Image 1: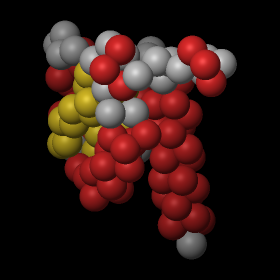
Image 2: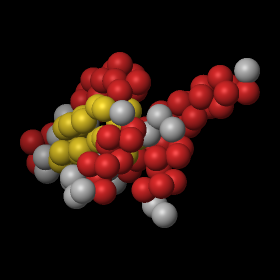
Image 3: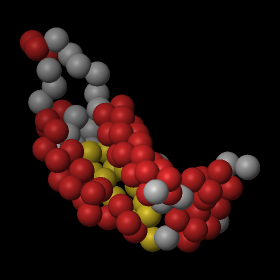
Length: 110
């Protein structure tokens, strides 16, 4: 039971962190008279390495986020957390790493 609760909590925490990180990529709010048009915003591409178990959830988030920030494109690389960790260690470019297990993240930053 504890493992299941921990998995659920880590999943919820992960989604909350994703939302926070993605929202930080937006432009600061301008006064209504100076709001930039969507064409004036620079195009941004974020590369996200994520555990395969997060595929469905992250694709839904990407669809919703595209409505809120049409200039931001989320590019996903889904695989096992261990494989993604290895790719990052070998120099693969990634803006965000979402692991299914905290172990891979802890090993990556040792």
